[in-house]
Image (cartoon, rainbow, N blue to C red; front, side, top):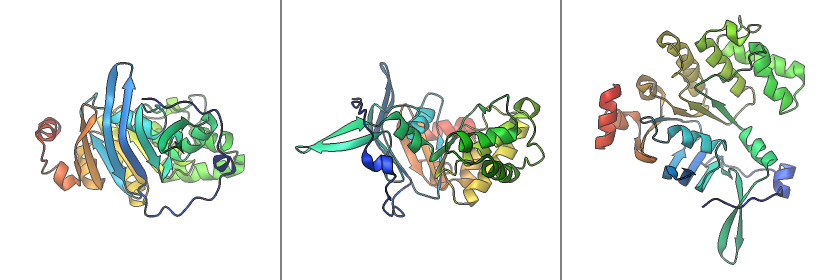
Length: 280
């Protein structure tokens, strides 16, 4: 089911040609998405849309495919079948049509890296560079990946660290920060590339309970600012308060989706009800 590799870089992708108006296009479109790891079928035909400016929270038990779905959106995992579009752009592949038959060709890694740079991702573990200060961690990608001048990257990093409440910790190394502070630096680092979409993979699961609130507060601020967000989380209160759409996954499929008032407060499916009875 995997697509063949295409070693070339399409001219339109090289030149950065002007994109059409996509204001009416969902920010994320997942169609019949499959992902297999060897003989293990993790995602089994997932369909999902996330509107721009909205917050989608994905719930589900461990092993249901939530994190894999997120990693496929960001091209950290190559899909086995189906498609992922972000802002109307097919991720990881280009389509060709020959005699009525459509084929997918794997994009050059440099093009995939450029696509990925438009998406911010925050992981369970903070993945900060331990030998860099908070400020240096946030500056690194704009300077090394985008080629920003250090003065510009520094000014932006200071703004972002202030936004996440860490203006007094800019010169601290990760080992000198609490888990919640490290995760807030990780959020600032993801925002430094000015992403169109933010993905959060259980961002509070590695934190002590008393530190969860400070990270969720930053995420709530992002949601209020209109950032499109897809969040894998077990924080039901956050989902109820902030999400526009809640998705419940189990065994590689979406069991139920809708507004929090339906999925959390009045679920239709027995599997959703059973899951929520153990986490509420």
